[in-house]
Image (cartoon, rainbow, N blue to C red; front, top):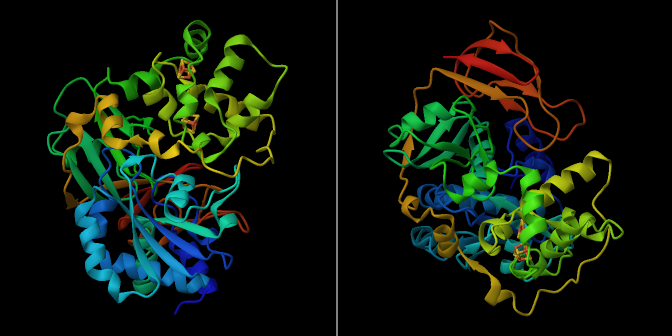
Length: 442
Ligand code: SF4
Ligand code: SF4
């Protein structure tokens, strides 16, 4: 059994961070206060097909990784949480889970956002994370499937994180899920999927709900889960291209205060103070005498459901909430320390949003096709960003002209800062070192 201290050191040195999108350094999550470790196999966003396939291809590595986490933290149990529609993943778990102590399978409903930590913890344990707080306060540590695979590989074979699994889908000739070295470009990912199938497209790094529009020279990081090539006129792209000024003008003119955005808000349904309709009323009418609707923006998880699904007027509560939250943070305002209701809404079960309906509403049903796993080995060049995760950016320890091998440490966070180490993802020569990245040519 690996001790918690050894596990923490290994994960820091190995560069293990949350691979599901948030990118929190995994060693910093481990705690002896945890009684439950939850494996997040919800994939959360539509069209992403990484974790469900990893669960089939690497089932014993993943279950062993979970067992290691449970034992190292002295937790009571590990919950393997898998969406109901991932039938092959569920079969793989059922066939192997008997070999592991203290692990149990929990089948999740096919809802969005099932992978949001607060939602996932409630679905699997019935516990409600207090608003603005972290899962360990209710005794839970949540880890994504790919993260647990990385933990297993670091502990058993001292393999540092140098690769990433990415689904490439949408307007490409051959949708795939590829295992690529961290630092390959968007353009290379598109080539791996057979190229684009149209002249007119917009690349989106991440899922349709929370991803960001990117350029062809942007690169894969340790948190990249998907590259979607989408039509310029689809809802997820149009939403990201509207101007904040226009968003406010629209809110002033057409918000009917129907409150559907609040009724379906997954955080509000778990008793948190975020109420997007109240916020929209405040900004549309300039109601600044009451700051609560603005401060409550800190309790929004930016899932995007209010603007991509709930609002019948096509308004953008999430984008406006993000903007206000960012501005408050920039002014030094911190997350308010106030309790939520502490109980779920009695209508919550009926108000959860089915994922298939969300995909249809986004206009992406035609892109929800298999994206089989493919391994890509020959990459000529990588650009490794020094900020790949939550915390401080890494400081490089290599210089131009150095020769590096795969997995060699090339950067680390400043002493005492939150972060993890960064490693060469291909063997070759360092061709550039800047404040933001290190480039390596094979
Ligand atoms: S759903 Fe749209 S129209 Fe209704 S309250 Fe929310 S923002 Fe306003
Ligand atoms: S993005 Fe909208 S639906 Fe999601 S948590 Fe924030 S307010 Fe609620």
